[in-house]
Length: 184
Image (tube, rainbow, N blue to C red; front, side, top):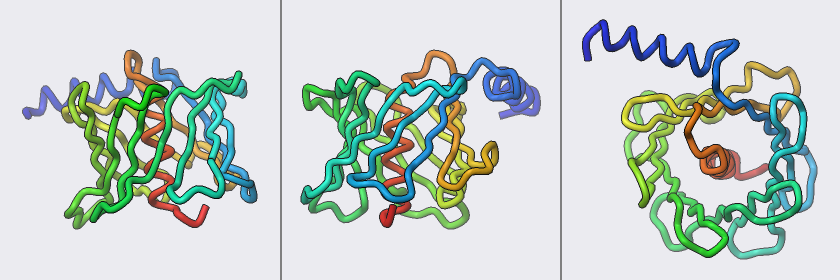
């Protein structure tokens, strides 16, 4: 990749993820104490767009991503009997949309992989513990997760590039958060 390509990539990222960029913005605010890990995902205007409904008292961690009316959009569930932590994301019919797992070797930064049967795989890298990371597809940033935009505890933002499946990006973000912070 030459300097010209890198400069163009940065200009494209600023168009999408800059202060007045075209990316869709969401805010995740988790409750400090909640039964079943339920919380809402709001848009940048504060309107509730999605609900993460944690299923309590199950053998496997199970989270449903629902629309405001309660219809399940996808299910996020831990995979049992796997060597690495992983969570599967499935549509309401049970078809796998993605498998999120930690990369085998990540010496400098935390890295996660998102295997998608219906498209190129995604990579997640950055400081997962601090909620400061990016999701990329073919070395192009498609989403950015950041806590620095908010002062409130357990609140962080997700920006999704135009044309990218926001529900899947949010499901991946919830899965990474659930695996990186299992005590929540």
